[in-house]
Structure formats: C-alpha cells, structure tokens
Image (cartoon, rainbow, N blue to C red; front, side, top):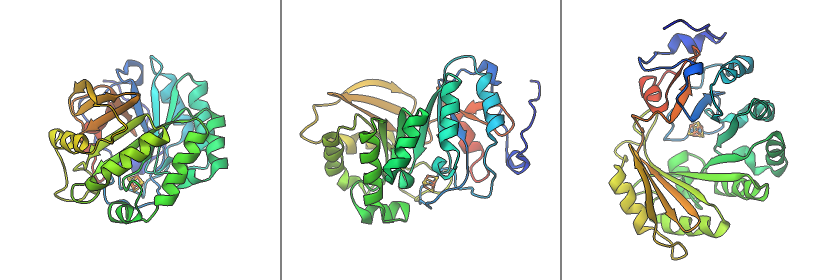
Length: 290
Ligand code: SF4
C-alpha cells in the first residue's frame, strides 16, 4: 500500500496504531464514515469509548481533502468527543453538504439546548442528529451514568431538534440495574414526542466503561421487549447483522446493538494518517490512544 501524506496533527498520528484492514478514501466500501473532528468534551461520562482529551482538533482542509476523494455519497458522522465544542461546526456541516455528502452530528445535546444554535445548524444543512439520552427523563440516572444531572438540558435539546425538523435518532446505553427499569416510561415518552428512530445499545468494553454492565444482544432484546409501551405495536425484526438487530414497530425504528460491533464494513473511521478503517475494530485497536 502506498503511504498517504500525514496531516499536521503529529501527536495524534504518533499515538495511532494502524490496522491491517484499511482502505484508501478512493476505495471506500463504507456507507458511513466517522470523522473525529475534536477530542474536547463538556461532559465526563462513565461510558466513553473515546476518552482521550489531549489531542488537537482535526484540521478541516485535511478532512475536506479526504471527503473529496470518496467514490460515492457517504453519510459523514461528525463526532468527537463532542462536535459542538467546535466553533466552526456550522461551516463544517455546510461544507460536507456542498461536497455532496450527508452530514450527521452525534451530540450529548448540552449545547443544543439553545434553539438559536440548533437553527444555525439546520440552516447550515444538518438533516440528522444522533442525541445521547442515557438517563432518559431522570437527573439521578444521568448523574449515575454520565456524571451530570442534565435531564432538562437534554430534553430541551430534543425539543429544539424536533421543532427545527431535524431528524433525531436517540441513543441510550442500557446499564442493567441502573436505567433498564426506567425504559418503559422513557420509550413511551419518546414515542409520544414523535421520535421515529431509537437506538439502544450495550455498555461497550472499550475506553472508559462501567465494569460488569455489558449485555449480550439477546439480553438487550429481552429488556427491550419487556419495556414496550402500550402505544407501540409489537415490533417486527426486519434485519439482523453482526452485532445489531433492527426492528420496526408501526412508524418507529428501533436498533439494538451490542458494542463493540465488529466485522462490519458499513461504518468506517477516518484515521489520522488519511486511511479508512472499519469503525469498531479501529476503536478497539486504539482504545486509550486515539
Ligand atoms: S461519551 Fe460523549 S459526551 Fe460523554 S464524555 Fe465521551 S465524548 Fe463526551
């Protein structure tokens, strides 16, 4: 394989441990790519797959060069740590759109509590936001899982996104013995709000995580089925691949995922030396570094 030019983010590249299975941007097989645009965050959750904070932000021109070389339209997941920590997030979203790709932001939602900021992201071209809601409706659960009582701010973010007509995917890590008993009430709330895309996943044993709380996919499904609100029809399994199961219940899609989700060539990650790697293999290989 020929070498790609390294970006001027030497600390990041220095810590990076390349995988054997990797692709040049021109040969990307991925429909979704994760771009870790910043390592800064305004939270300190107990389950954080990428807890390294002392790395520089990704230079945007370097990122745009990678995106320009992709062979097909790709969903670009702008992630962090927390992508809203970057002041230029609206410009990045606009540029990804302009280049013909689909920008998606994965956020903890703290900054999305401001309606004017959400409107700016929408105006820039944001169509989809993945919002993490690990504590559901309850401060005590956020405090236990994410070390911050932030239910009001998270729920305000959800309202703002829905009001701006940005498609919302909610993401909730199921921590047995902590938030599983709250799931029926929370699912009922989400369905009543009009959320159509709900992701539930296990605690992933990578980065920082709550010990002894990981679930296998069958256990996750058991909790999900025991938590169904009366307002939802019986979910139908519509797809199963690797570590994920997709369900449809009326107009609502539910995805269950056991983390890390290995062996998939759907989601890739842009590496600091300009290659693309399968997302979860990349995270596992670099746990605690990049
Ligand atoms: S999980 Fe997300 S919000 Fe929480 S500390 Fe990690 S990057 Fe920040």
